Amino acid sequence: MTPIRLTAKAPADTAGSVLVLPGHWREKRLAFSSLAGLSSPIARRIASAGTAVTDAGSTAAIRLPGDASVKADSIVIAVVGQDGSDESVRQAIGAALRAVPAGSDVVVAASKAHPDQLRALAEGAGLGSYRYTRYRNDDVAEPRRITVALGHSVNGPSRVAVGDASKLVSAVNLARDLVNAAPNDLVPETMAQICRDTFQGSPVAVKVWSDAQLRRGNFGGLTAVGQGSIHPPRLVRLQYRPAKAKRHVALVGKGITFDSGGLSLKPAKAMEWMKADMGGAAAVLGAVKLAADWKLPIAVTGWLALAENMPSGTAQRPGDVITIRGGKTVEVLNTDAEGRLVLADALIEASKQTPDEIIDVATLTGAQLVALGPHVAGAMGNNDSLRSDIVAAGARAGESLWPMPLPPQLRSSLDSPMADIANIGDRNGGMLTAGLFLAEFVPDDTPWVHLDIAGPAFNDSKAYGYVQRGGTGFAVRTLAQHLRDSD
Image (tube, rainbow, N blue to C red; front, side, top):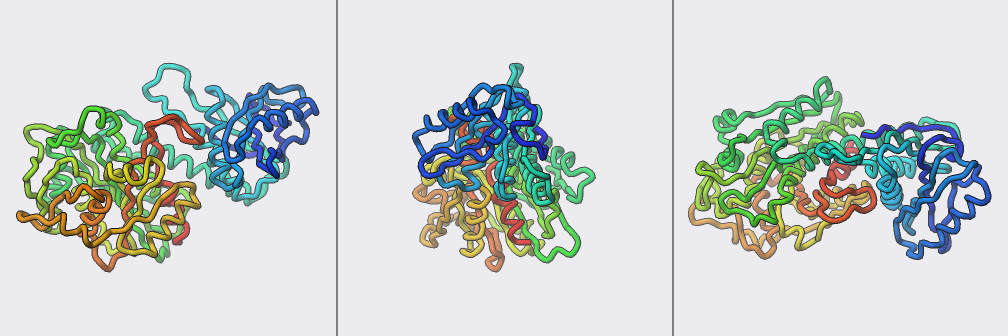
């Protein structure tokens, strides 16, 4: 991750290869709060470049050469959307950071920024600077350094704002790295080891269930989904228990490290991004890390249900009946509806600790993409108040979620003549029937919300704002914001 530091220097007086200058819409024109110290000619060029942006709701990055009045070699104008919201700031600064050359030393102007806006600015810079370079030999390196130039003394609130933002960026980028990793490099065992390595020496305790332990413990969902792969399943528990915590939140993440569909094989094109099917588990890992890094006074337990869904002679078959942890039986009609099976085991285990609430996160259904598209997640559950709180937390954090129902009329489509429940129901409203399936494994008296992030977890289109192509780290910020709101 590119380090982010603060300086009291004015933006024009801060050395760097690129100066990022935010422009805000004021009465149908761009206004800049950080032009002090720049020469009149370059100030005029900046103002002129700003007038070229005709869409007052747009986010853009405009690059100009510098002059002797600014220590940076060039200037990038980050056009903040007309609403001026924190998310507009994140998107604008993120777009600017995506536009800077590899290895740049970036200065971000932050004159007169309120701590909340300063935090959004630093988040946008950190998220926009992300590059996934593990498998690349060409020069796509992240910026070398990001300096946020205040133009006034660095006070406590400013330090806290940028420090919190840096921790958030670290957690989100960890989730992005996991989603972007090639599936031959990220299998259940290696993801479990990453959890151990991430939290070594931290206040988070890590427990991993091996394949043999899952079998002995009757974790039938994880065992059945993972039995077709040479890489056996794992269940990971991450426990953060600060002193005097008054609330306990359980986070459960779907972690299918690659989803071929099993014997209900997906089309080849649909498999190309199925390395992202562990995006829910990655988000839970990032959120627990952030809760610990922020030292939130709330107990958090993260559950990562990890398996690889592959076809083979040992794979589960359509028509199999499996027994989930706790004893409920499931008729597996489609092996490509596997995420709900591993989540069922994890939800049962999470419920045993009697948390105050359970939130599960999963790239669960293609129906979510059909209903809400690639940028908005679906939120559903058994508690409208909790669902509203999480949707609102997402809005504050810069992630879009939409409340969805769990219509009881759809439950009958999951009835099975062979078992307690089938793993698929009517394809119409498939996101909702998947949620109804999961509800069967959560105690009625435990507030629970399910987030289907199938679309937002992976950007398969062109980059925008602070979002590159590939893993987005979606839901880390929503979960962390909800935890912060709940403390």
